[in-house]
Amino acid sequence: MRYPIIITLLLSLMACGGNKDSGEVIDEALVKQADSVEATVKAVCSSCHMWVPPDKLDKYTWKEKVLPVMAAKMGIYELDGATFYSEKNDPKVPAGIYPEKPTIEPDLMRKIINYFNVKAPETLPAQQRNVPIGEETRLFDAMIPSVQQNGPPIATFVKILPDKQQIMTGISGASNQLVVLNKDLSAKWIMDVPSAPVWCDISNANQWLLTCMGSVFPNNDKSGQLLGVNPATQKAGLPLLDKLARPVQAHRLGNDYLVNNFGHLAGDLSVYNAKGEVSKILRKEPGCIRSMLFDWNKDGKKDVLAMFAQGVEGIYLYTNKGNGNYEERRLMQFLPVNGSSWFEIEDVNKDGHPDIVYACGDNADYSVILKPYHGIYIYLNDGKDNFRQSWFYPINGAYRFMLRDFDMDGDLDMVSISFFADYLQQPEEALVYFENTGNLNFKPFRIKGYNIGRWLTMDAGDVDGDGDEDVVLGNFSQGPQSFMSTDDAARFAKGTPLIMLVNRTK
Ligand SMILES: [Ca+2]
Ligand SMILES: [Ca+2]
Ligand SMILES: [Ca+2]
Ligand SMILES: [Ca+2]
Image 1 (cartoon, rainbow, N blue to C red):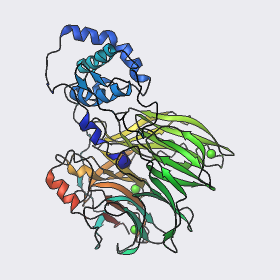
Image 2 (image 1 turned 30 degrees about the vertical axis):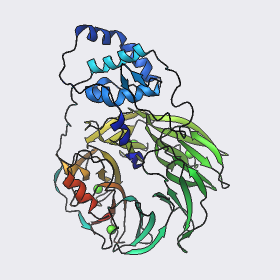
Image 3 (image 1 turned 45 degrees about the horizontal axis):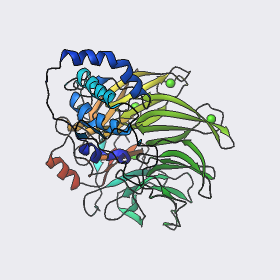
């Protein structure tokens, strides 16, 4: 995730440097030095991204994982005998990512390293949950398909087609396929596609837009495609767009296409015309994990909302000014250690102003540790697009959620999944049902099936046509095996590519 985001883990393994001493006594002179350079350190770090207070990561992670990568981004590839990992020799990395010469003095880099070493805690505090994940909900039954993927399941997306009572899923691995299932989870049709299918826009029933990511695992290739799939013939012609940088979503925008080129070190959110040419770059930044069309200012024209999740993390509004012009405004900004993973726009408190529900939990980059600030947040809009946190529930590795009135009592409930759950200590956080109990409070329940797959993708909709909202989950059994046992990993790899949570309300 970022399976898009997923898998930058390789990088973190390669960062190298000193030893892993903990509990070392810090010299008073070093403490003084840290105090004296604080303003400078803030200025250096803030020149590229939102300032991350030292208490957001532990000492070891700062020193051995994050700061070496940051040093390389500032043109410092070696320091005092340590070599810092970079991708500067990859010819596909665009110019300007890695400076030829250091942009700061090596001695300042030493001071930055000392600053975080002095200020950061030995370990992060534990997660604070006011309400534990309670008993198992009786709202859902889990249904498992009879047909299974050859080899470990790698479901790259799931999508419910409620009008047809069908489910679409993407399969990656030895082959890449788009699979359409009937509501009993039997296969209806299967189509080979050139690379991992990760998103499908079905707004035009005669030509679905299928985003194929190229390389799921992080690299600087441009090998993704946008396919036009005819569901009647179950075929796609030549790609509508080709050589895309790890696209993770595309939406139909009139005759144009809005594409999240998630990329890796480089990427963008761009509009392409019908000829396949870029007609507008909305933001030239990698990490656009989620975009949506939404009429934010209620003028009848669809605006674009987009979340970036790599280095610079935030949610941006692109107000549609007509004639293909958009005006950018940042709605929210998040710490680059958050690992932003998903957001939805809902008027949660029904005051007429769209609110933001947000998840963060990607944990495959440079700081693979459990983070007490991972979880799901509700930010209420004051009517002037200022957002105030009104609710937070911590979930390690929170990856996605769907807001629906699952119990049909008139208010929005939520089902969430986590891809980097603390599988060893509290595996039930990988799949949670939050029942809305009023006044913006939610009661968490475990859901049967939380531990039979590694849930990366989900969708909600009425699959079986009985009037209530069902949920489909996709198992991406590969990827970094952090926070899990070998038994867990083996169980996910032997599991089913997807399950359906059949809503029992009706
Ligand atoms: Ca609008
Ligand atoms: Ca609201
Ligand atoms: Ca409800
Ligand atoms: Ca249903």
